[in-house]
Image 1 (cartoon, rainbow, N blue to C red):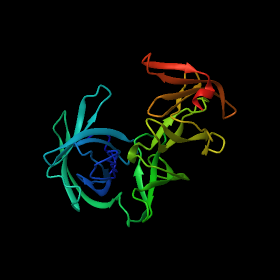
Image 2: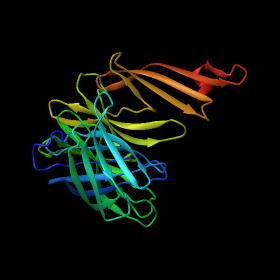
Image 3: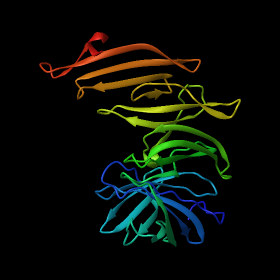
Length: 298
């Protein structure tokens, strides 16, 4: 089993909840003699995406697999996309209190038993209320990892992200907590990037999705003097960051894709400065988008 050098391991297994899922369920237990934590989510067609980490390194590892005929199988792959480990759960049932499975080294055949007990579910539906349920994130920084705190009121149907916590790897020391409100994407809520192009990695948290492909996120920049993150105030729809060009690109679609606006920004003193924008309208006769003046898209 790779990278097991301490008697404590934490594993996170998360599949993103979008629709018709079993739901996110958190477990704690053991792989062999090593303690683990695990959170699962599975698509209605059985497809599974996941993340797990070992507590001695706190380095999230993305895994993927499938639930087929009540057997859940998840694979860890190397950079060449070749499977190197498998976690299998026969007779998988998301509603049961206890889960048992096997961790297998694909190359050597080494096996370790997995025994888990359910801790909580990220429940949906009216009348259900909870706070402080943490989901470890797939993306991390070299020396830090993240959890997103999910809470739910009785009047909400879905749980919502309420905060992001930043921990030091290996020690699990809480470095910072940032409160915010937004939708949650399971283990895929946090992304890493250099958003102000200063050569230092920052992070963002998914905020919401809108009509069509439009999304928004909150962007937190790292201050090397304070060694803390702060809200950049960057705003825009479906922002993309080009670290080579040091530019930010925005795309906003409307009206079933018949109207699209784009904008390009550069960053000056941690502020987004727009340097160009475009308006495109779908032309039925040409069967393509045609650029118009910006007022046509407003």
